[in-house]
Image 1 (cartoon, rainbow, N blue to C red):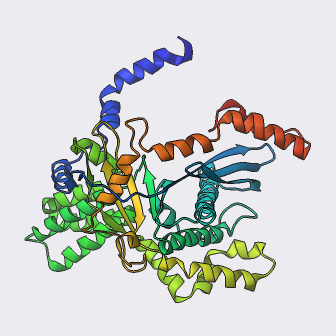
Image 2 (image 1 turned 90 degrees about the vertical axis):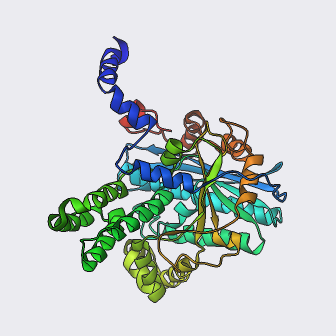
Image 3 (image 1 turned 180 degrees about the vertical axis):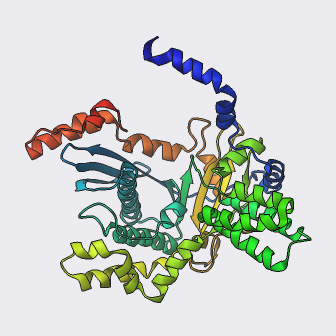
Length: 445
């Protein structure tokens, strides 16, 4: 049979139930009933309100990566901001040498693209002289904040994250001063901040119900639970010692720890347990415990932080002290970044949820990411933001008309990269491009 279709059919038939369950339902655990109850309790219908009219700026980016036989990586990144009939654009093409694996190369180029998105948003605000508008960025604002700066593995670009955070801070401050609503809007999200909050509630209740566990061991369980999210191996090693003492008394705690390390997203929970339009409770997010430790290093001595985390960047600079002074000045602002408020909204029960992020100062909350650790629920009226999203919702294929339009205009197709840009590159550089054999066999986006 052509294309191995016979082998394909045979394997799908043999694995039908497990594949179907993972694709349709996802993870199944002993906590499903409890999580389902909690997510329904924290689900709210969409209110019928008229949001204040705001001018919309939609921002998106695109990038392409090509690997060359010489070992170099060529990338093209571009970003576009659309405001009515006006457009603001940025493009960057460059190459670098890198020993990193392909996934790290993807991260490097994605951050370059996000940086260009910040720049076009700033350009739109300044050139159009905007105030009290709304900026929609495709993707999570919070996710861009959590990867604290350090050396990058790309030669000649190792200090790039200093520029990234400098521009990000400028954008947020500009929006705050001009009372511009800035939203990160994500159609696809693997985040689990809501699940983690609900899981914490289940865990707290279960520990209270443990009658025969000593208070010192209860404290140890809390430490284990915190470690489960970012140090699962350490958490389970410690838990096994307690389980030898208390046996089945800790059976539910074990299920909770299993769930804590599982790849179950908020979107999966919503899809499994919710069948009406609505939104989750808003949650104020800061950095993780690990990120908090790094923030303290920055607050205590930003220069020492730069020397520790930018050692390879220091080797690339011709003026070490000038680099440290500039980098320390920028990283010292990071603890002053605002916390982010995030929630999920389902505009149609047949659709997938949308994740929304916005700085906490949107709601007159003056909290910084250095003020607390993790996430906590907050009582806020998010109806105006949801009303704005509803105005841009055009059904299952068009979750946001403004973001769809900018995506269509900025997207880099394979044909554009290989026929237009590569052809121009060959002429400008006066040599024939030779890709790796892997690229010639496989179609990369």
